[in-house]
Image (cartoon, rainbow, N blue to C red; front, side):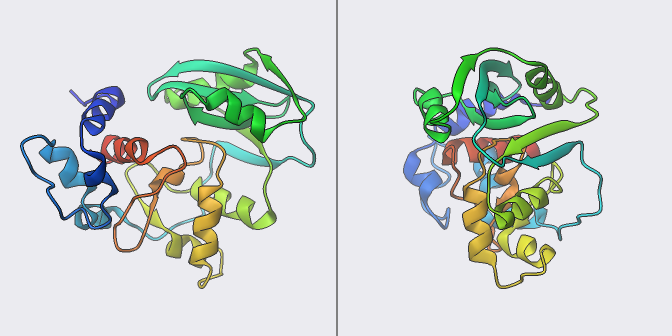
Length: 229
């Protein structure tokens, strides 16, 4: 039976921080205290085999819509999912914010939308989002987010990275016809406000190094191990 995300995250949580944070993944990887199989899949040499050129031709059930102004009302819920409890926030038009649950999740949401009224209320868009994560049929999941034109282009690209595949900042820059914009792409990926639905965790460096994630290295490591095994 395939291992659950929760079980993988628990294994990742037992790995020493200095191992996950090490940029080469070469030191003390396979001590008795560590989980050998998970560390194998996270090694840059292993992850490099999952990097593929990015194709933007596939149809996606997720559509990104731009916020022209701060939404009047934000509706948020804490929802149990395959990936654990998530804070999912929506406007009247779409999902605007998703994060893994932490002590600061709600505070971070309110900081992101300081002028909006915040209501603890589940909406139909929340239901669509939860169904999407459960791999149930979804016609369209709307995302309603604020970003620069370039950021929106990068986020749109991320929607085309399928599960079981990785991309790089360079591949995304090439797909955008801006081959020298890898650094700018990396900055845009880091600003993604929506965990999982916009799969920025599937972007790594061309060398296979994967460290760096808005919601923490342990979550990124667990997501990579879960999706690639």
